[in-house]
Each structure stands twice: as structure tokens, then as C-alpha cells.
Image (cartoon, rainbow, N blue to C red; front, side, top):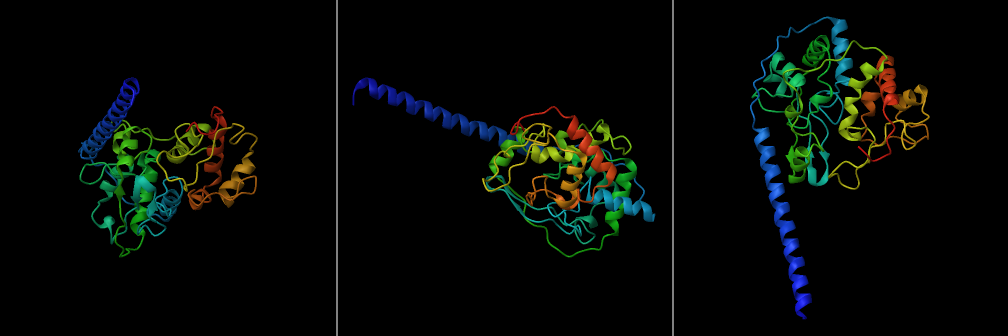
Length: 304
């Protein structure tokens, strides 16, 4: 081998080695930071909450729990709150929402602890809840917070063990890079949780509902592949008024999509979409969400 070629190869191998070592150090640092954050104990006081038995309030609580704070969907805690479906996302891990009925975690959480969990993503031991997107719906009013907890307490206890919750290294790294929210409490300003205005069919109210979409469609809602997700997973679509998104859509088109799970081209939404929750939105929630999405800056598909 000629000396110059040998030197070039040695240099290339050295560079590869540096990248591998550097990459390993980066991953190790991010995983350590994730573990430290997960172990943090938050000093968030328990709120005062008084459960209600009013029929109208319980019905409102059911609506909130099935729609804008969707704990009763299959990918969260399930329609009976006894545990959600298993979600397997390749190298990210395997997740399932736990049983929160009176025969599960509901038995060990007080009403005040549940309220703090929803508002601040802080568990009864003071540490963060993982993967439960409380930051997307912790804006509900104090009245609705009481209503949804009161409704959840009326659900029958179900004897069902909790499913697995396993995080891969990639999930921990992507959380630290703010690409996937797993460590939820660190994403909340515990000194000031902003609550939504009263429900109206406006952009202002729709902006709060729209937070639910960011976990899949990205912070800009322009969609694109979810980082680290397996190739067989559905790719979230563009929700902005761009040519590759919702440009030209009317409210009637949008309402039909929510109610039927079928878009204006006649294509059925992927099962990953929470169609059961979306179909139960009331008119105000639908109009507010559409108004908000229509107000977004048009962005090309894939910007997340």
C-alpha cells in the first residue's frame, strides 16, 4: 500500500472512530440528563378540589374526558379507564396507559393528586409522569378539572393489570432534544399554568385545543415523519393551510373529517388518529379548532 493512501485511510478510520466515540458520549450524556430529570421531585402543592355529583357536571366531565382531555381513548386509558392499548414504536419502546379505575391506580390517588397530575404532570411521589401529554390539555378550566375527575370516579373498578412501559435509548435522547415529549413535567411552567378562555368558536380557544395535535403533527403542525418511529408507522399530515395541507378546505370539509374519519378525497384516516375522540367534539370545539388551523402560517409538508 502506498504511504499516502495508507495515511488517508488511517485518517479516515480515525475520523470514524471520533464520530463513534463522540456519538456514544452524546447519547450517554443525554440518557444521564433524562434519568436525572425523571428523578427530579417537584415541589408543587396539592390543589383543593371538591368532587361533584351533579348530573350535568358529570356529563360535562364525560365529554371532556372523551374529547379535549382524552383519557378515555384506546391509546390512553381506554373507554372504561382500565388501561389503554399497547403501542409499539420500534426502537422508541413499548407503551400502554395504566388502569386508573378504583381497582387500579385510582385507588391510590386522591382527587387532589389526580388534579395535580392533570394540571402539572406530577405524580403522587412528586416526580414527572411519562408520556401522558398533560401539557396538551392542562389548560382546561378549574370547573372542567373537577368535572372530569368526578366523572372518572363514577367509572366501575376493573381488575386488569397494567401493561408494559419500556423506553429505548432513542426515546430518551429524542426527549432531551425536544423531539418527543416523554418527560412531561419539565415542559410545564409550574408557577403559571395558562388556562383557556371560555369555550367559543374562536381562534383564541382553538389554539388551546390545537395543542393536542402537536405531539404527532409537530410544533408547527405541518406534519412529517415522527422522529425515531418505525417505517410502518403512519406519517402525520400537514394541518396548515398550505397546498400540501388544508388549503381550500371549508368548515364543512373539516367537520366531515372529524365526524367520519374520512378526508375530502375519500380516504380514511389512519387508525393512529384518535378518531373516536374527534367524532365527539361539539360544534364549538370543531369550529374553534378549524378557525385556529386556518389562521396558521402556511407551511410546506414535513416541517413539523
